[in-house]
Image 1 (cartoon, rainbow over the protein chains, first blue to last red):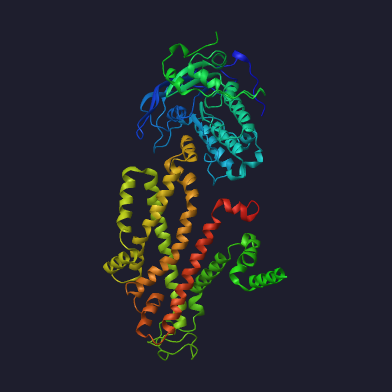
Image 2 (tube, chains in turn orange, cyan; image 1 turned 90 degrees about the vertical axis):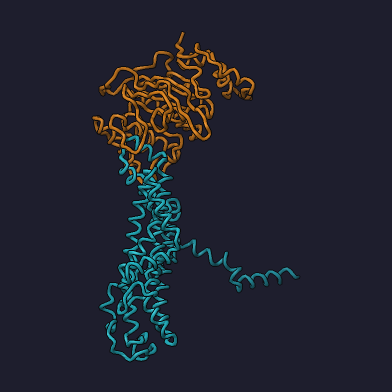
Length: 305
Length: 309
């Protein structure tokens, strides 16, 4: 998988598309004031987050462990109960996943999980599981596609459709999980740290693959990661999350060139630089954390100057 | 000077002492067996199969009518009949063979029924949760609060002594263990990523249970079931022994042992049905143990040395 070459600020919304009609031209995802609360321990993990994702757009969500990234992703998909706010998929509220069957329309939201080992059914051949995705797409009125073709699209041998998950490596399993999610032709793909369980050599290629395929399909993608270098490669827009809130958001390159919020600065300073000089990344001092919770509205929705 | 003597002495000890011999001579051939590394399971399967064949062929192979009382009473084995005769002049060997016809199908029926009832109720409880779960689990608690055999005795006595009532009583006391096992397994899997992925793809609860959950929990349930066949035979024989199961003329192993108690000097009356119960229970337990090893998906590829799927 060759990573997509960066083209500066020209890429963004739209995408190449597949010629399939999209029902709306507006954003695929509109989340407003989403809140997630846990009872034990009492914690407001996500504290009123709003975001929109356009078709074909890749939005990255970054932040330290425990800042609420995964809770937000699960709330968006409907796996986690929302304590407040609304999540709309192209205008329709995304219901919380319960005992009832998901409506055909809502199979337009798909998710890729962090742990590739638990995201595939160990007792069913991978081709059959990708076939579930194809079936969901067909139910929504898409043309049927071949699971084997999806395998080759994620860089695996199409002859392996009959194999079982335990015959694949972690990186390969993640590619299969991505193939299954994309085979459903989602309008929105939520990826919750899809690369953090993979080794360094496969991380970049899997991330680039996800971008290529979702942009190609015209799907919006919410990509959660704490790997900032990968985020810089693949995301159109970046949201920086700290303690359940978005502290800085906007065009990825703008944030990278000129971070405004002190937390973003601290995050960027913590990236190891492989320049050979042996400099260690800067761990943020505990004392700095006080500044990060201060609201800085000027840091939101930043666009290239 | 002393060293070679010591060596010889220790090697001699190693060759003669079975305890020291274990790691060197005993374990290695077991590993070399490869995919046949479950000799006990195979022996158990053979014995169980033999008993099933006997049960099927009993009317053909029995030398005498198991109910006819036309032989000399309390005849020792070898004196005219193979395994002797009982106090009423019936052929013990023939009764033993046709006893397999009574016990084995009922034990299998009992296990199949309790697996079905227990697994379905447990899966429903685990998957749907809330009050459904509470209700079903409190009922299992209620049943499991009593000692199995005593509760089965009480129920069998209340229903009246007959083999079918004994099976019914055994069923009432044996389904809750399957319900609990299944509920726990379903509960563990229902929030797993692949079940959630299936739900996101529009799986109905039934499809989730059937495609994503059932194949992944069937192994432990099957293992418990195969281990339970032995227990079921013991329970049914036990109820018959107490006079709560098979009615007198029926050649049932448990009631045969019960009859033997009244004629304690005639050892062959109790020993042979007892051995029949022992062999079949042990055989099914070995099969269950082998199944447990075989159904572990990770050990399967390691053992088979290649893709066995």
